Image (tube, rainbow, N blue to C red; front, side, top):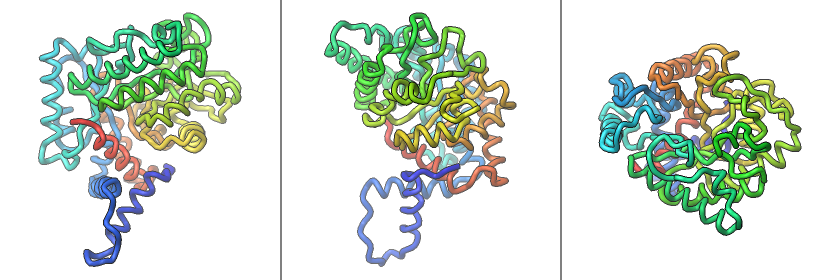
Length: 386
């Protein structure tokens, strides 16, 4: 796995600290460097199983957290949890669930107990909301406002309201906004009103407005689905089947990737990568399994230095790529940092963790890069409210 410039600086800072005695004449570390060094140091102290678990977002079925998931969290073998509507019965029930996860995370047996779990949901707005409450309006509704100023205002209000709503439930990550630039009425994104517009400029402006407003209240945003699913037809759902987006490289650069430039400039903390294939970008595998897209397009070309997160590792688009563990390994080899085990089965997350641990142990995943990715995930966690 390639080690990016930002995360390389973590290891360098740690080495500098370890290489001098207390009396060495070096300038005091800035608060930012001290934080990065602490996270790099923690990553260096974790067991292989813990390192692997710190790359996995788990899910579960029903309204009661499985004892197995609580145990994983207590032992530092989880980065976080994604929630779905089936996990919710009432506000009191759900907030009690979140408290139980936070209590497990605070266990003395968890070496990462100082870092809040990544607790997330798809709270996009309109039809796609896992929890009751804001944002009420869909992206399509916002994008259809008659003036640019009203659109901007509505996007900002949606971002702020989404953040405040999720915080009220104890969550700190929203897998939103969707930055897909839809092409035809009724297509994959437009069918559920998930795209702001068929104009890349409008999607770019409103997406960055949403991100800025939401992150200002303390909830991290995850822009999706890079490099773009806007050209997918209604039947091209990567959750269900393999999908190939046959756009030219120029179209992808100038239209579909365009909103990510503004999102990155706005400081978006996560980017979710699509499971569709994009042959014109030099990839014959789904984007989230492709170093050419994850490392070449997103990291190198667009300069994203935040945390990458997969779409659901159980997606039908990945059926040709074998077991859950093999999919997780392929994603990590491509440069994906967080593996989203979103099939509402704790066992799916465990399969991901076991595969990553095995690959770390036998050298298929380089230890230095693996620790750097975990350190970067810990940085993200440190930036969020508990």
